[in-house]
Length: 257
Image (tube, rainbow, N blue to C red):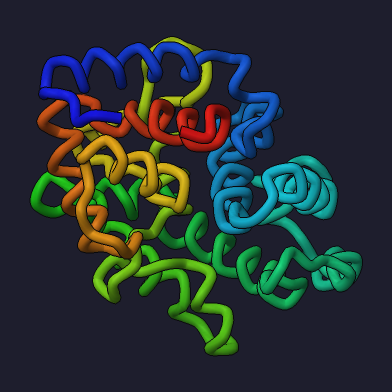
C-alpha cells in the first residue's frame, strides 16, 4: 500500500474506526466480560482482571475471564470486599498461561486494599496523570498494587511504562473505562481523565498495521514505540487519539492488513 497523505490517512482510519467501533465488536472481544455487569465497581474490577489476562487467543481469554468471574460469584466488587479464606480455596485450579491461582489470589487481596484504602482504582489513575498522559498513573498503580508482601514473579502481570513496556493491557483497560462516544463499546464511566490523555493498546496487530501505514518506524512494540505512535495519532485526532485502536486492530485481526 502506498503511503497516504495526512488527510487521506485520516479519512481511511476514521472510516475503519466507524466500521469496528459498534456493539458487534463486543461479542468477539474480552470487553464482553465487563459488559455483563451494570454496577460501576463490578465493571471496573471485571474489566481490570480481564485486561490482566488479555494476551494469547481471544477465545481462551474470554473463557478464562468468565471462569474468574465465576470464582468471584459473578459479583466481583462484593467478593473483593467480603471474601474469606475459605472462599479462595476454589481458585486453586485456575491458570491462564503464566497467570495462575496464586497470582489471582494476590490480585484479589491487592484490589481489596485498593478499594478500602484508596477508594478504588479510579482515583489512583485520575490523581497521578502527568504531562497530559496516563502513563505515570500506570507506574504509580504498580507501586501501590505490589505494596504488600508478594512473590516477585507476580509483578510481571502489571506492566510499567517507565521500564520500557508499552503496557498494552492496562492501556486497553483505560480505554474501556475512560472513552465515551455513545457507540456502545467503551464504557466512559471514569469522568475525570480526558480521552486525550489515553495511549493506544499497542500490540503486534496494531503495531504491524501502524508500520504499514507509516505511523510507526520503531520495530519493537515498547514504550518508545508507544510514544511515537501516540504522537502520530494525536495529529489525526488530538481529543480522542485512542479511537484509532479500533481501526488498527480491526485492520490487523479481521482484515489481515
